Length: 284
Image (cartoon, rainbow, N blue to C red; front, top):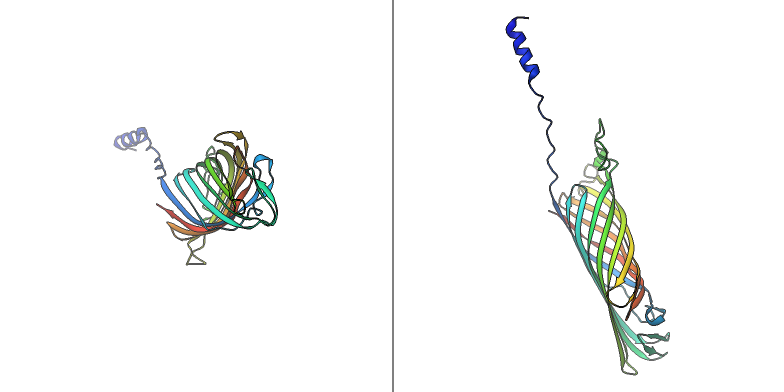
């Protein structure tokens, strides 16, 4: 090896190694969810020591309601707002005598009733385990020699924290005696929970749908009346299947239960609103 070649080789050896490329941060995404919900009220009114089934007050019909959510998503973290509004009414002839809100309803008397329940809240979730990803958890190292799962399959398990404001209103009128009672309550709910999402590509075998995903989550916590009353429980359970017709849009079908034990000064309820739902998901 001549002197020139030796000098060139030595110079190249002394040059610093090129830095490894840094992965670009994941972009923020917005996910809008709108659904038509067909829930019914179930359970018992419990204020003033009562134990009156909601069907006795003719407030058990399924009603078309609307709900929605807007999430900001980046990598494994999601922050969003969500809410729903439900209302039902009833009436007729009393067939099961009851006393509610300090008002008596005797057998054979005529009555009318209404009930509304709306809720709005914030939910924060984090995917802490993704077994099919190159980095299964946020604290683990990338898997050496990792290859994507077949059919683009992905599974994420996430934890969530939710804060909600819930408001309820009930009106009862005894048409026979011309007496009426109204009750209004608002509650603050705190819930923690867990959920999962399983998705996979379907375009090769079913071209109309690009992707299918299954999602389910459950949360449980406590509620406190924004006034006199006692602490109670709060719970939520949702499950749905989504069919993505394009990368940005999907239709979904599922079931939702929102309930708990609510103990306010004017109104108490040990029950839930629950029913089928269907809607659209749009990503921006």
